[in-house]
Amino acid sequence: MLALLPFFACTPAPEPPDTADSGFAGCPADALTLDDERGRHVVDHVWRWDPSQLLAHDGVVFVDVPADVDSLHLTVDAGAHDATVAVHVDGALHSPAALRSRPAVSLQWPFAPGTAPPPGCWAIRPAADTASADGEAGRTVIHWRRGGAVLEHLPLVVGRSSQVTLADDAVEGLIERASTALRTEAGLRPELLAIVDLPDDDGVLLVERELQAWLRRPADLDLPDAQWVHLVPRFDNLAILGAATGVPGAVAPGTSGSGVVMAVDPFTEDGSTDLEGLAEVLGHELGHHLGLFHPTEADASAHDPLPDTPECEDADRSGRLDPEECPQMAGNLMFWLADGVPEFELTPDQIAVLRASTALQSGTAAARGSR
Ligand SMILES: [Zn+2]
Image (cartoon, rainbow, N blue to C red; front, side):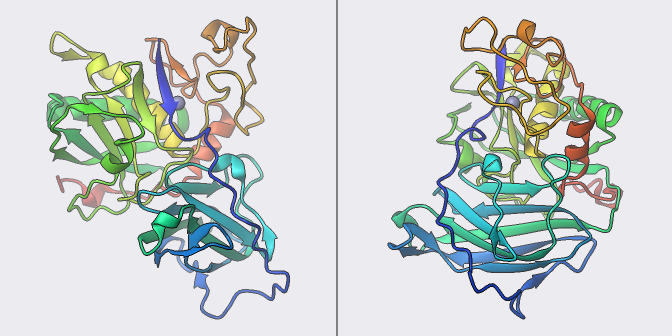
């Protein structure tokens, strides 16, 4: 029994003070606009410590959100520090705290049925929650989709640790297996754009401490719309097979929350790797990355916000939700535990969240062969 954990999804970032503008009078003339069917705004910051707020911030990012925006994804990256953000829509606080992640904060709408991004003037106040961020660089990235376009392509880049012996054809087989399952279950089409070899001296990824730095690793690839899948030999905690940085992860590349990481060694025996098992981990971590929680968390203390995923209880009070305690969801892709039998089931609400992701593209065939 091995865990498929999002490390930071259950750890709420500190709540920033309520900065609602009581005299709200619409967006300023220089507010960002979301003109295209889909796109991305990148806003760079230099954090300034404000002792009265106990935050390092750089003012407010205004975005004029029209009524036909289907999805909006917000990432605040405060470098090595924990980021936080307050979002006001037409002057009213609108930050779903349940969806916070760290160290980069990523939020997405919709995250459940009926949670499309509300139209209006969004006042986004990104911040870092420590004085030591003073003078350091931060970044806010806003992705959006509008106009009801149906998108299904999910471009991926695999970053392969030099300590991972999986050959190119095996990596391609892994992506193909995950792609087939996600296409069948959810209509998604993950596509491998490139395999990038990344130097790795240790061969072990220390969870939490090194994960952020690993995900931030630079790559001179002009593939800003691809999501990163990192293959590492193993985590220091051998019970962990894979990790996403939050629910959702950062869709933007190059932040401490960008992409997912998977351990290959636990699936390798006598030089042969179980690509089916690895593909399930990939599907699961991509599920977190695109906005899905565990339907019921490992200790049964929390449930996802989706109405159609049954909520299970730790009936024997062991402190751990076992598959026998949740038979109706044990075969779900987002069940917290991998039991060795690859299962990719998804509910309609889970599929709807995945299909709304701003990570999806209209097609990537032109980018093929850019390895
Ligand atoms: Zn998980």
